[in-house]
Image (cartoon, rainbow, N blue to C red; front, side, top):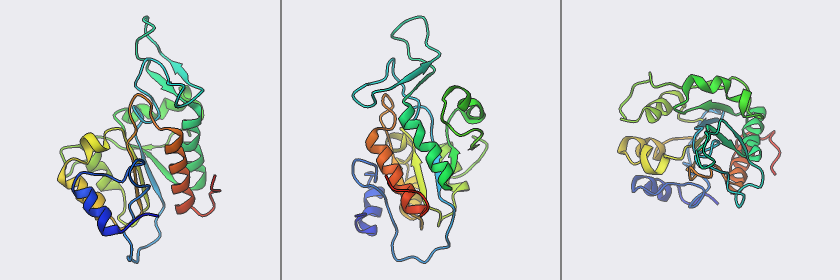
Length: 212
């Protein structure tokens, strides 16, 4: 199902990432690793918060919005699909350590007040974490995620920015833990297919989670 680990590692190094469209996950096989709590590094804009004037009902039937400007074509502060948000709570309840990795930083601590269904006061990472990458998110990920921990990373800039740099590519390619990457289109955020992939990943790394 996951393909050859060496092949997947080469894909990463050459700039093709195991996202929803080309592989469900990257697994380094044959390694004996300590069982670690699964981690989900979660961006907000472009993942849960669609960056568009209106939600695309071809993707999700139900959209919610808050903080729209005076123009009907302005991009609102918040545009989300409740069914997309729901999977975050499911993962959290199943035992996944969900961590915000977003430019919203400490503002994530109040997102649940507007985007209903989000767990309250999830951990968040900040730009203060230094490292070898020019991208603060990559440095934060490398700093906080144990090598053997199963990792899900959802960010709309994974392919176009964060993992174009050698240090990020190699870190992802050489991790010991199950690693799944999802890079949504920012105007949609995560799609129903992405949600299915996330649920499958959670079911795989947390046995108590009911597969759907």
